[in-house]
Image (cartoon, rainbow, N blue to C red; front, top):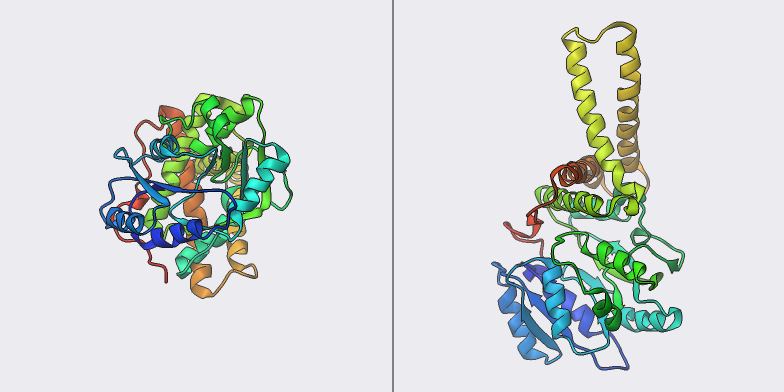
Length: 341
């Protein structure tokens, strides 16, 4: 478990791991980044209370660096990746081990079931769980078990991880997709089991969300630079939306200044504005659909959905054009997280 500024979530995440019922010995290795909110002190206290918890340092604060440090420090043949911003469902680990054995897969993952406490966070969670929000990856709500492109978090065979070289520490986001690409290229199986469930708590403010999605988009753009069309077509939808918005702005300026007129203006308007109008109608429809929550949550949806798409798309274009470089997810920094009960 890589950890950075997760004081409000860490104890719940650890409890969901340590209460897993297993017939084999297990440990929890925390890779501690340079937290500023008391997370490190909390982790040290929890480790002193339970000898199954082990601590390693992750001064770089980057997720793949921390994951590799924890993997190298671990002692057992199966690696269960967990997240400090999530909680494992009861029976998760035992079922994952059974699925690994039954399928012969190298990596097994399940469904990320996002949840929220506030109207904003609940709105974000609903969009995480919707194919409209995050593009329909299997782990965002798939129901059919089978071979997969990637795995959320992942329960992995150590021998395969060592064979392919662990996580690529030059990648800051999307490291799981890239690892699973190498696992599949090495001839191993990545498997999705919808019976495996992890509760994920999204970012709890608009600024945090925008930061997270811009960084994630930038690194997906970097992965496109490195691996081209091995990236699914769904990853290209948000940048296409950003380009369309930019073209609409330029078109509007040309029309207002009289540069673009007549039949050509009508044709360009139809090509540019109608898709944008359709997108806006989609956003409104998603906000109004049953299950959208109360008025505040529905209003947040009207802002959150375009924020997710446009932030991700802007990051993606920057990542494709100049590379992700030193882009980091700064959404864990700054103001406090929303505490859980």
